[in-house]
Length: 510
Image (cartoon, rainbow, N blue to C red; front, side, top):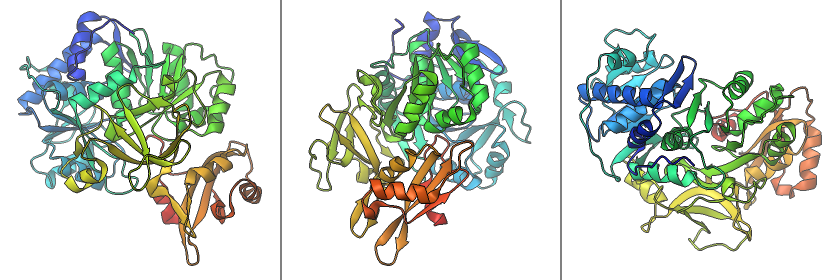
């Protein structure tokens, strides 16, 4: 790892240190060129002055509705340097979702990119106190651009903050209901940046990190931006995922670390974009945000020679909890071992620890665990115990060596005739068929059994799916009550921006 010392407070303070030690080293590589760490630091200082001129001070919330590009990094660091709290929002949010997050967070200012500029500007009618800055290339009456203001900015005032001060409100994906703002402190974010640097994920100053995931997601925001700035690595920012474009970025910039999600690896394989390509520069490919099917793990390693290291985390843990990088070797189907400083328990419905190999809810404790949900004490009490354990809502099991295997979300559990069916049990069987690229199972109401299993499958490129053959395979591999009563072939499945299947949308179609 690089010998750049770290500051415990936040990524903006760490940027100051890294810029002092590696001023001419590339920090951001993007379509418009390259920013060194010294240049990024100067732009963040100017951005801090812009925010302060807008009246933004310690504790204020500033929303970012920006794509994967340098402006996101600048604004994020400037918000923290001003002592304020970042509210990163996905650019793909619908107007009602944007309104909810901006209103719920009490954001005083939002910086928006081209994709959502018009929608954000219109919200001024219902949120009159909200001030709006846009990115270059967007012209809306009454709104200056971030770049314009940065170019004319003066010198910022120094703001000192404490470890337990608010750093970010990160809204959950909303796959099971209305998104809630997870309260993450500067201690939470800094702790998980340092925890993530353990094992094989020891990012160094000479590493080049591919960031094509949405930067508003906690995975890219903290494990990507936060860790890279902490160590002085170079970030290659790609605005949107395309199999060929990202391949070219990897080759052109000799990317050494890929931060990905399962749909990215599926797309690379299905498109043939990596056929015959030498990925010799890639020393680590990471998968998170959604479960990585074992067949995908094996296919990618066979096709490229690169082993995907799967990890597990959630927004409320800033996000990293476990990683295969902590193990001697990546183990297919497992999300690895706990990161340093993280305690892990698997408990039953009574809060008792389960035996090795038995399923239980994953409980997590450590300095990375969030403070609670913004303005929602009831929801906070439901997930945080009095002694600091986070009830994740995920079901998992551990083997005798401590490797964690995720079973499913408790809320996705299907109950057939009183028996528990975890969707991933069914999906694993379906994904073993060579003609299946993606699979998802959900529960459908049934008058006799309470619920029944319905499966949705997407064929691999050029393959023809036989639902009857898949059904026969399920009957051979699964207990009768776990077998789908119907298998539907789809051209695609609904996903969140980071690859989780939106089961709620699938259930609505049954």
